Image (cartoon, rainbow, N blue to C red; front, side, top):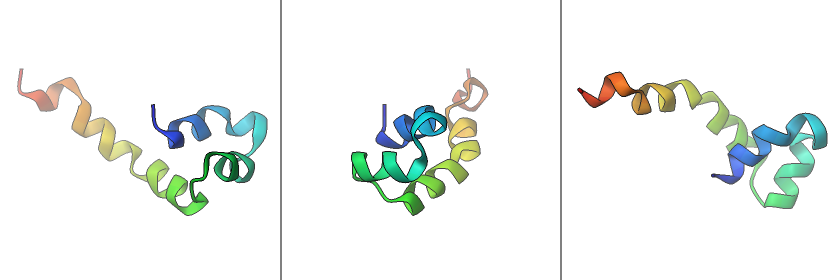
Length: 51
């Protein structure tokens, strides 16, 4: 599990700013990772494996 995933999972309880500071990741990096989520899901989907 990536640190960005931890931020996403717990951001409602603790806030992005605090989690990013504790986990030593940038907020801009987190939001960039979040924006790229649809592309990651397409890449990892079973249909893209050519089964």
